Structures are given as structure tokens and as C-alpha cells.
Length: 63
Image 1 (cartoon, helix red, strand yellow):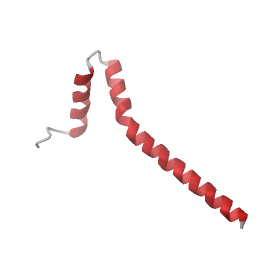
Image 2 (spheres, helix red, strand yellow):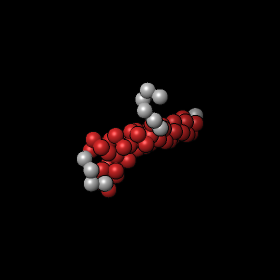
Image 3 (tube, helix red, strand yellow):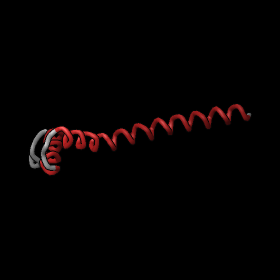
Image 4 (cartoon, helix red, strand yellow):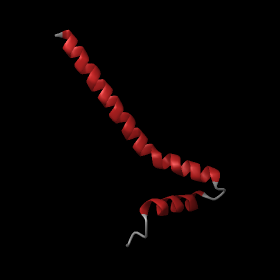
């Protein structure tokens, strides 16, 4: 009985940790891309944000 409970808790904790890590990676990826773009190109942040937004969107908002 306790063995089944322990394995179930470990499985839930492992899957929850994996889901949390994937969510963290998905949320922080744009921030890391923007940081890398600003660090490598000597341009101000608003131009870097516009460049990153244009690269990801594929076009103008009205299209």
C-alpha cells in the first residue's frame, strides 16, 4: 500500500516538475532572445524589441 502511494507521489512530482520546467522555458525564451539581441547589437532596446517582434510575427498586425 505504502509502496504504491510513494510511487504515485514520485510520478506526480516528476511530471509536475517536467511541466513546470517546460512552462518556465517557454515563458523565458523571448526574454533570453531579447537579451541576446540587445547584447550583441549595439542598438537601443526599442529597436531590438521591434526587430524581435517583426521576426516572430511574419508581417504587419493588419495583414
